Image 1 (cartoon, one colour):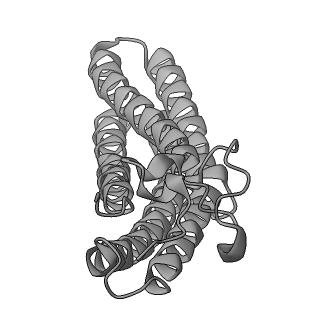
Image 2 (cartoon, helix red, strand yellow; image 1 turned 180 degrees about the vertical axis):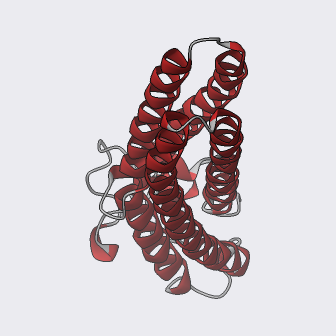
Length: 223
């Protein structure tokens, strides 16, 4: 039997497949960048933002050790204040990456939709089409993985917002403690806030891992 299939559909990599195309015109617009390529690109931005936050946490941890050794109470207050403002801005940057209306979320939705289109295409092929059932099963798994990524993205965003609220609230408390001479308590509280930010980096790492898994399973079984 002769099958009418766009050549791109059976290429070695799904990344070249124009999965945003209408099912009836699957081979059109092949010069566009596929949603999975866009998702990979946006994932690199998430990864970079996560790494940067991790770096800021490390610097903040070291800075607090230096602040604890300062003899000037005023200078301690100034340094802690600057440290918290820097971390606050860093979390705002992370939230931009995790935004439900952001580029990564949009790329995730487009990749999922494209995978559904591709799965539907395979489902319409004859039962004896090469690797039909295997590809359908794999693509179905990819759709579920994309749902997991979306859930993890939401959890990471909510966690980052929670940590941001804690940081802003504790910032005021810690500065006030330093003003009334409770420096040791203030430094200890600041350390706790900084260490708590590691929860964000861990959550974002899970998003990275789940996204990578989704991208791998979005590739149809090779003939």
